[in-house]
Length: 159
Image (tube, rainbow, N blue to C red; front, top):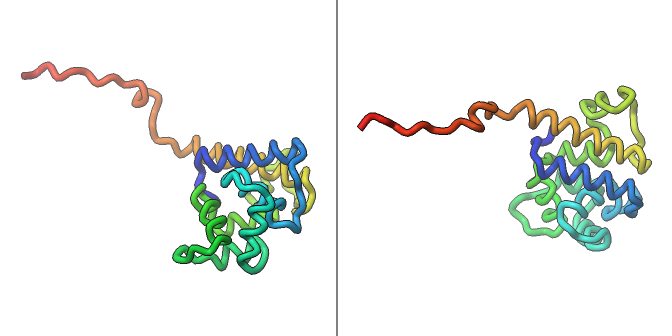
């Protein structure tokens, strides 16, 4: 499971909202597929720019993520780096592209079901559910208590 953080949660929600509002979607296009739409949000690149960068590598998002080498400056690697910087691993990237993370699928409204990777509505519900799940993980892992957050340090009266 991805590293739960505000940036990733917000990127997933924004991607879902953009798709809901009619953003270009084509599963077979690196710039407009599941990861392509998320990468647009994360990098502020257009689908055409992402497509051009992705074509410097070989394969789909899954292969690009698996073949990524953090030492090279290949443009396709730059896209993967941006997704990793917000907390995604190569497995997470694969699961986003194919809508396969079972933890997310189990949390879907209405219960577990398999989704289709090339159906806009399925992508939207997957991204929203994933954001909800990550937000829950983040909230559960906060270690600052309410009292600690608002505790005022008392001055030391002993001289």
